[in-house]
Image (tube, rainbow, N blue to C red; front, top):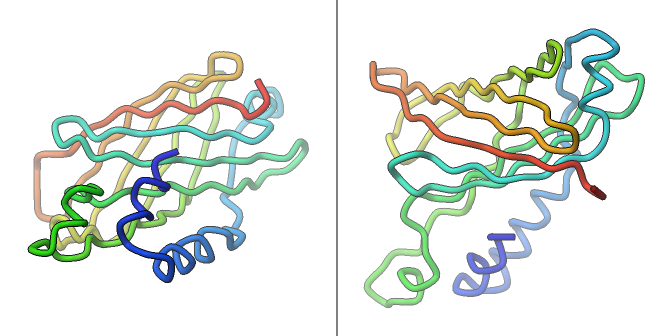
Length: 168
């Protein structure tokens, strides 16, 4: 996906550190919902997100095993102003690495998925933020939106996300 274009300008050592970090097993995420609702989320999912108005992007993974009330899930959020061209210029500082954020709550009611990420420190605003998301399961696809609240702001950041079940 996107990480390969980010790794090339930074060199091999940061790339190895990043990949090692991302290969660790994330802690289980509590998942709430009826048995029928949870069946809609079973499997391995991957997708992308975009923050409206900023162009910031991220990747998402989610996995729920049949018969379990816990899942694993991560959001990898790429730095706001990182680009391979900017990182290769000598006058630019090395961009911050992507941030791995843990999904910490998921509820499925019918075909609607609700959840939260955070609170976590966002270096773009140098503040604590919390993100809430919702989406609709449409077969092997989930399409949704999210809202991120900065601790000192009354104006949230909004965005869209989409995931597909692997193997479909």
